[in-house]
Every structure is written in structure tokens, then in C-alpha cells.
Length: 306
Ligand SMILES: Cc1cc2nc3c(=O)[nH]c(=O)nc-3n(C[C@H](O)[C@H](O)[C@H](O)COP(=O)(O)O)c2cc1C
Image 1: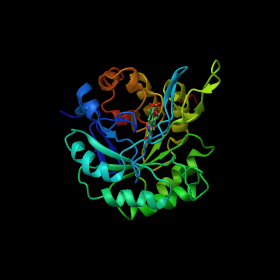
Image 2 (image 1 turned 90 degrees about the horizontal axis):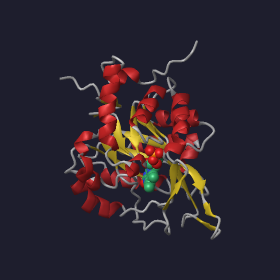
Image 3 (image 1 turned 30 degrees about the horizontal axis):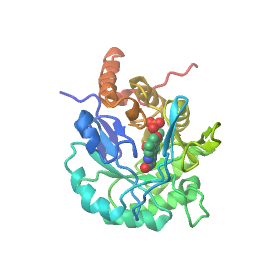
Image 4 (image 1 turned 45 degrees about the vertical axis):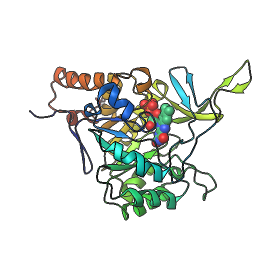
């Protein structure tokens, strides 16, 4: 029987458009026990850096109205432990594995991808471009189109695996950054990462997060993601992967109607660990009810008044 949820993101075929977002699903093993990763199109690993990182001081997360702030500080085991210990475990998972890569400069990204490029069960690399660039004075690597284009281009010469460019929503020009990713050879743009935010406990006068500022995610940022994706709709040759504030199955459809070919579920996982299963069921029901044959048919199909 035809799989109505199958999607194509560049070279990559996903069994359905639901992807677990970086940093919210660890390295997959916990999720496997909760609902079975065979039910999702892919999982993106926690961002990997060359050196291990213990991350920021706690508290690392706090709840906000309709969302959450996190300041994890890219805690991860580092490239070598990831390669030796985690990669063999990832092979056991029945889903596509996308490795999120982070770094402080171009060389970091090159080194990580060079080290991992021959691992057959890695389906793609997602470039976390919200990392501060030490060479450029701490400005996020992903803020300047020329830097993004050159970085993706250079990485493309190292690997044949698909590269996805994950952008920050904190930009006045998401289109230029997406076009730069495309020009560099990215096979998809991921729109978008968390929005910078902060919360203060007024009684202690202390910041709620050990890292002081953090990234806002969850329902609060969903309309931002919808608008960013809509801005890019019909303007790119490469697909958009939507990320931002999916907390119920309808939200995923909304991102797809705005122009996303696939979606990433992040903090919604923390509210309802069975959300992935509910989302997949809802997608099938929605297509049936609206008389579509496949999820691809509704990509960007927002109905605009003429
Ligand atoms: C606790 C936490 C950790 C995260 N860690 C990463 C990370 O390591 N790399 C990354 O690219 N994004 C990271 N993100 C961002 C998510 O992948 C996602 O893009 C963002 O949270 C927006 O989606 P959401 O509103 O569905 O959570 C993290 C988000 C959360 C909540």
C-alpha cells in the first residue's frame, strides 16, 4: 500500500515528515522505549562539538508562559566519545539518523564532518548555525549570508551526505540566509532554532537560568515559525524543515501549509511523550478528511484571499 506520509528532503526519503528535534530527544534510546522510533521519519541528535562540553550552570531550563527557556550550553560528550560510544548505539535505531554539528569556527565543522562522513548509518548532517563564532567576535555563524554560504560550500566538498542548514529566527533577513544556504549546497533549511529570551525571579532578583539568557521554545514561538516559513514559501528550490512550537498535531499541519516539507518536534516532547504517535495518526486522518492522497500535496497550500 502507498505510504501517504512519505516525504523527500533532497536525497533523503523519510517514511513520514515527523522528525525529533536536536537536543530534545537525546541520542534516541529514551524515545525508543517511549514510543518506538520506527514511527518517526528521523531523529536529530544533540549537537556535537569537537571537545566534550559539560554545559552551563543549572538551572538549565525554566517554564515560561506557553513555552520554556533553556540554557543547556551545548552539553555533549564530544566528537570522539560520540563516535566510539554513541554511533554504534544509533545503528540499532529503526529511523533515519541526522547528526547535529556545532562549532566555534569553520574548521570545527570541517573536522567533525570529516571524522563522521564515512559512518554509513548517518543519513545527513544538520548544521547548528546558532553557535557563537569566536573568530568573528562571537557573532553567530549563521547571521551573515556570506559566512553561511562559504561554510556550507566548504563542508559540501568534504561529504556527499546531505547538509541541512538550521537557522536562527533572530534575523531580519531569513530569506538571504536561506538562499545563501542553498547556494552553498544545503539540501534543506531548518526554520528555525529557539529565540533568545530571559526570565528573572523577582523575589530573589536572580535570573531563572544559570546561563542567564537562554532559548525560548514551545507554543510561544509557533506563530514566529509559521511566519518565517511562510516568508520562504515558493522562494527556495530546496525544502524547508519547520521547527518551532509544535505542541499538538494541528501545529504540524499548520507549518506544512505554511510551506514546510517536514517538521521537527522539540519541547512538545516534554509535555506529551506520545505526541509523535498522535501527530502521525492525525496527519493520516487530516489527509483522509480533506481528501488528499499524500502529505506532499498540502505543502505550502495555505489558501490566500485574492
Ligand atoms: C532543551 C533543549 C535543548 C536543545 N538543544 C539543541 C541543540 O543541541 N541543537 C540545536 O540545534 N537545537 C537545540 N534545541 C532547539 C530545538 O531543536 C528546536 O529547534 C527548538 O526548541 C524549537 O522547537 P520547539 O519549539 O518544538 O521546541 C534545543 C531545544 C531545547 C528545548
